[in-house]
Image 1 (cartoon, rainbow over the protein chains, first blue to last red):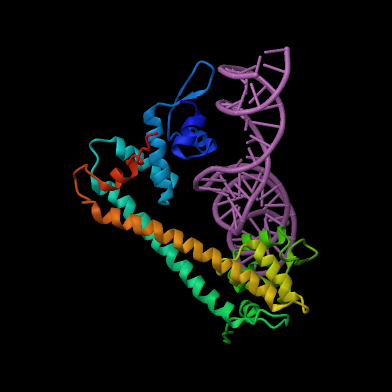
Image 2 (image 1 turned 90 degrees about the vertical axis):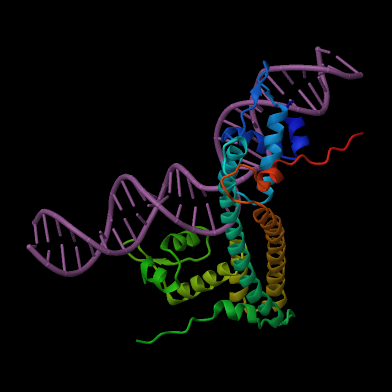
Length: 134
Length: 134
DNA sequence: TATGGGGGTTCCAGTCGCGGGAAGGTCAAG
DNA sequence: CTTGACCTTCCCGCGACTGGAACCCCCATA
């Protein structure tokens, strides 16, 4: 298989696939003409990577996950650890976004959004922090 | 005020402040010795930027927001538009993260996390997509 | 007067995960 | 033989900084 075929079948852009080879996530063979030659197992790995990335795992997590997948002697605890860490990171990010969202939503609702210049959004952003006098 | 002072008072790293000058968000004056010399108004703009960034606005949004803030003839509708667009983006991102979170959480709970190699997380990632035969 | 330390300055490189585009080689069809 | 669809490598750019090197400035102290 050439790169275009695996791109279509894995759903990953060819650029991404080349990049994954660059950073050593996959090691496709080469044809005589210099083209990358992918086996079914490469495609499988790429699909694995695509799904891991879709779940938000970093490239380094993906590297570890692929290694664990290929390691018959792995312990599921290792995999779970990575997933739990990532889950926590996601939770943190969601919390942060929800906090922003709450503030922003309040401000948006407080703003008339008409032709006049008065704007609670700008006023909030411009707000001096409470000045602590010594 | 030197950069260290504004850094302390605005809560922004000196590096960030220099970067903001680089990209034209602020235009501090210079002392004879070449040091940046910040006025209270610069500090105020930096604090504004800090709060806008904390709400997740992009630098380009911040540039526009500062311009609107300084424009007496602005219409609050312009500000609200930016905020609403940003709010939608946040909502999209939250939804995406929650979808990841849901999948990940299911997988984490399905995984024993012990010394055995069997792992539903890896199995899910390795899963072949339903093959559509023609 | 030397020196030490804590400011400041510029510039360059790196982060993360690719995407765009140039310049060129390869291959099958018409 | 040419066209067009592939493929290759290479380098630059994104966003919003962050780290570090190499250097300058200023003040206090020995």
